[in-house]
Length: 269
Image (tube, rainbow, N blue to C red; front, side):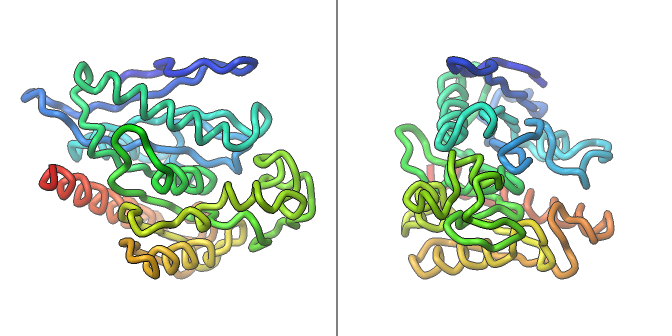
């Protein structure tokens, strides 16, 4: 793997880096890619962390994805203490551009990129999948318990407060900046040409209500875009409340979806 590779510099901020997990590739074939986006309420988090319930896995989640023949890039993005929205989305776009420019030397097929994120990273992965792209757009999105609508209160936070994670991301309370909150909401950007989404969410989530994923799935389906919703009984945020075997099952389902979408994209190409 390649660790700590700089891909962008931002004035007044730390250099942005990514880690790249590359499968065994003796044939030097162009590999499909997962761009993973970490969670942490947009305030904290490490690029190589898929959540507490996966931290003790051996092999870890990214090694497992690579073992399935899919490269994985785990990218930094600026956190709320460093910059406000849309800065983190701009950073992830920069990571995709960097990977695209180096695709030939790294044996990557960026035309078969799946974005995969959890929690706040799921929110950003959704936006990245729904946004217009100059280069190849993501062919699918895997979203674990990601916020889809920042305009209304659906969890423990007050949209009028200026100190919630959403307010710190936006630079002001969502209720005071409704247009900015809407701009940062994946639900507002759903469109008929959206790539396939796999939305997986715990039914007992106390941090990000399951209705976020339900509403995004419904909106995508209404527009004719493919959306696959999996709600998980007994699961709180971060898959707490589930036995370890069930968490691994969710991961395996997400990986199968990823491989299916990248194979379909290869056939279309």
